[in-house]
Length: 507
Image (cartoon, rainbow, N blue to C red; front, top):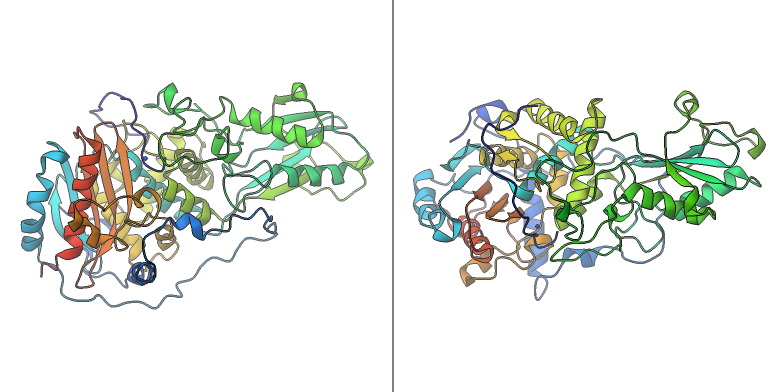
């Protein structure tokens, strides 16, 4: 795994709200992108915003009732490009005019002395603005854009993560096998609507075992390997800061002690999420926590993989006793992007590694993500990754890589990637942008039009996403400031750049 030659020292994380020149290579060396599906998505968002009196959190649209969702028996079908292609509107913005409009904003003292920027017209793949664009810099949570894109490319939007239970070596012993689902809930009061639940899994196990009581629960988290925290994380990131949990293959509510997401600050996490989940599962089975330990499932499980259908007396070691499945991967990515959830991001990065058949560790996931970016025709060499969430200050990503990734997802040639736009926060409306684009008042013109991922670490403020100009051109952009001093002023300055692009036809 290639690591950056120059790395800034790790520093204290400042929580995000909600958590947090053209290279000429790959698919963007051509002069025309086939179609612009994203324009439909964003224009629909603008239309919806126009129907309400004021912006509101998109979370309110989700079903938050306690009525359990039906458990999936088969994967959802792979989405197809059903949206009609939209021809590019208006003329391609003039690069000189864009430079004239943006230069004064990019030079704002609020953004500090080191700013990396790239702006691309998606339909023509023309770079409209570039400053330090090919030089990797600290991305913070805009890293999650690469995680979303590579996870969708590797697994597809409909993929589900399974948590299974198999019979242990002796009668009454069971093994719960973590499948890497970070959204797993204990019961109906989970953090994520429609999540798989331990109480339902326990009910399946009881039915499969019949009159045989459960006497021991083993927790198998062998799907993931290597360190459970990344280089560049501090212990405070986990607790009391609660920015992320230890990354294990089994956990509930993304490792949270209480299944509640705080818009600011952090959510305290268990020191050992897998063991906490195992104990919660054991409680559902009437097994004391003293009878819960970590281990591995019997080898026979790999050989048989069969669900329990025979009488309890015939249950053999490794026989499957129950399984529950997560919501589709695209839904998990929506939550990851909306709330800037670092734990979800790390679990999704691991899926890229698992799909590639390599070690599901921080290093394995990083290498698999970079390889997948290259397979997509993107300049993967312009990324040095130590995690999939952006919490590590050692990460480096170029604006060029971010805007090309966004443009590929928006271009219509890879429809599975366009699913990432559903989860991107909308300016003045949802997620980590819900309270952004308010001041100065000129920024408000971009509310409902800009979809972007924010990034915040101490001294680092980034914003990368897509927007539609007043002439109907779809642009992808990345603005990355790595030497800011006042996060509030820096965020407003970033917003002003995006808002200017919206207002400026620049043709």
